[in-house]
Length: 587
Image (cartoon, rainbow, N blue to C red; front, side):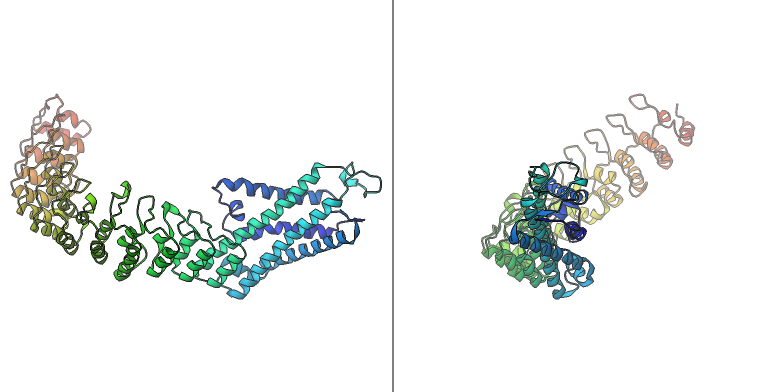
């Protein structure tokens, strides 16, 4: 018996099929990749693209081939199955319509899982499942059709109904239609997976345990990741709801799954209770990020969203009780730091005390936590527990260098009072005085270091003194302090530069004041570097006529340098400076 497909049936068939696409799109925030739960930047992109093309191809064939949905059935069983398939298609189409045209359901499912209430949400999930039945109906319909359909050779637009004696033709069309029918079912499965997954993220954001259970029940992946690679368990842990975390873990979420930068869920735990749940289910207490930071490093630094230090202490206690290594070092990208380094740098005094009680190395295995101290209380804690004030860190700095570099006068005075060497030289040849001299903010530290015997004329590997640093950075107050403590105003570095040359060439801060201080205190205005640079020549090249006048007024020579380059030649682009030089006898 031949059953002709009506126009209505064709329309229902195609609308149900087309409905898969907007359902997936509306529940996702992207295009084809997100429609099928596959990121655009992952290798699986080709698969959903092929599926979408197959769906499109099938719709086209239905409209172009008059007998595309005709069915040749034998017996009541085939007719009954066909009828069931048609009912399922109608069910799917009406469900899709309900999802998009009943506003509360649309809001509950596609826009904001918490705005329309649990009732509409449950109805929406139910309609999604019915929409899936519509696609199942299409596949069942295809199976029945492909078992009994007869194709007659000749133009499809005028093909008569099959009759007795006509031999069925095995057509490639039959295979392609079978394959497209199977692809349709797979596509709907991916779409449901994407819908459930997207809404699950929203349910967790709202701490909605009821909706999360429903979504997981219908197949939401508890190990899915977002666009930056973070598993959904990380999101649940950050939300701070233990019940949600327990739910995901009970359904198979991997507590040690790595996300962005190799972080695990335990890194995001913001309550000690949350940490206990993860640890009870096998979380690696010393799981490192790609920088080598363990959860204990994060707690010590206070980056878990914990505002109260008492919470940080309790959290750290939980981690330590479960075997966290208090002396675990980070990688090179984080200067091989221990949790104690992190606690000190964050001025987390209670956690620092706890770590020391549990055996943390106060020297940080060479990373010198004392160098990171920003308060006297923290520095005192470390020194009282054995940290050396003259211990050089793996970076080559001493604690005094770090304090001076931060212009931290309180910590500087404390370290000096505990015996820190004011003339200690770092691995790259710098003294603490040189570190402090780079800004007028370091004036007080400069005074303190000099009062404890710091030598202002110690040179670094480049031959520069603290005065070179102060002059090149325009630190006028520091220049005056150093000169008052007998700093050599004409000390030359390895390139023959004296501080005055640096002040003119690089000293762009505080205007001309640093130059005036140096000149008025006897700086050699005719000093010449190894490359023949002079203070006057540099001032001319900068176009600073006021400094040129100042230097000439203090006896700067207007003659050529040792390489025969004259100031007048350097002033060739400045008529005003050239005339001034000529007035003072420039040849």
